[in-house]
Image (tube, rainbow over all chains, first blue to last red; front, side):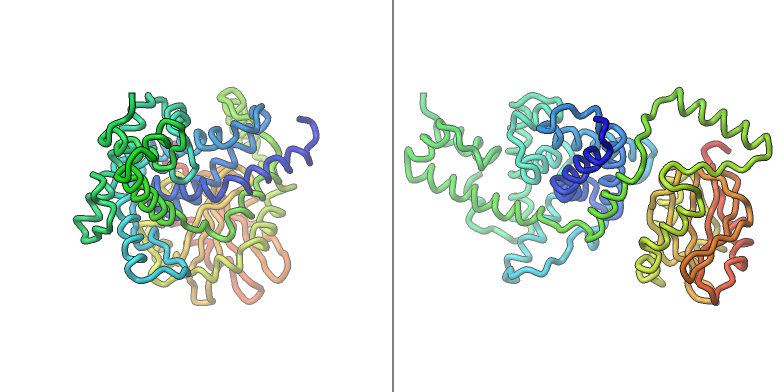
Length: 175
Length: 238
């Protein structure tokens, strides 16, 4: 790509298309809003530098997720302790949920953060990005059957956690 | 062979939005299958709502600002060459002020402060987490003692001419002032920069530098001693 304006336009399109989902993914991955924002900015900084390597725009989402996951791993290589601040993570949104629904949502959020990374990560890829099991398999480098198992267990753990915390709803019958 | 109920439940628990023909056929095969699928979808809706959090309002603007930077391909060879060049320049007693995205460090300080200096000061919090201060400084290979950390009322990462730095709000008896830590940038020590109604003093540290920024009524030099004594940089190299 030789045209700088075109390059900037392409970058901005990626930012507009994916920054929100990447932030959500980073947030639920690390459980800290400041770190999530930093991870997303670092991801786009690296993406900007390497934008010319992205030949297929259809692969952009997966490419950005890969950059973010590497950056997240690098964070822990530097022995930065994991810091989960639920007060910051559970953002109170101005919505029209009933108190019970809001409590249930907060329990779900808390449950997501309690999931082990091997369950949380495929679940986030599916729920935040709408990845198929095959795409998750490719992204994480694990078999599709392992992805299916982890997704099943992730939801199972969330339901168990919610039952334990007193939210039964009508979905626990599934298991 | 058709799917049994147990297989179906596991499948929809793993992939509730699955719409492949076999799953749809199984779903329609009996009321209990349909009910289980509907329950899974209801749970999924709640899950999707739970992860749906809003990013900070300024995130997209900060990301788009990245594209103001020229492209730099990173590899060990240029980094090593750059390091050698820095040593050479330092030894020659010259000031290295090359800025990659701004014309010079002075322009960066003015541009950066104009961009979000005021809004960052507004975030100052008397009870700002000391843990967060040390965490951010540590990731920049820096630390500080109580002299400075006791005054920091807000800190966040920020871009600098040469990588990531920190933007701090510091409490003083003249009101809040701003310090921008630039861990990889050298400046002309003691140089004053004036812009808008603000002024800044550039201070070299063991590694990198800092800009102390205040408004026209504030004496930024009053913080120089604290910054030099308290802020230790380049810990990894030390």
